[in-house]
Image (cartoon, rainbow, N blue to C red):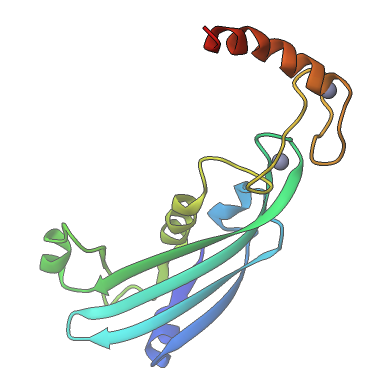
Length: 168
Ligand SMILES: [Zn+2]
Ligand SMILES: [Zn+2]
């Protein structure tokens, strides 16, 4: 859970910086590289309710798809939510993210929102660097760190028939 109390929200006229321990949130299943996650929340009050605009950062450890080594990266997520006690607004909220926050609720749990914002940013491909050379498919050498003898011969052999074809 990532809780923000109504008192905290009401006391905030501008922005709120939260430093939340990852442990106890839904993000602890990720391979987090640090113990905490940073959330910057902009709070705006108006007649409709309370707007929360958040940006969140989390350091995680990923495994490279190509060379299988671990590397650290930072996920950046953003969200924008209106919390209101007007049920009619929530029922008609096709376009905006609007949640009910009635006066008897002492706090908001933004855990699911933070989780979604971060997981949307999780790339489909995990690469330690854009030009990762990966592992040699024949001997398993990490080609970012060294070269191997089998590489050139084998690739030359594979391409020879194709080169031959293009000459005709
Ligand atoms: Zn890699
Ligand atoms: Zn090799």
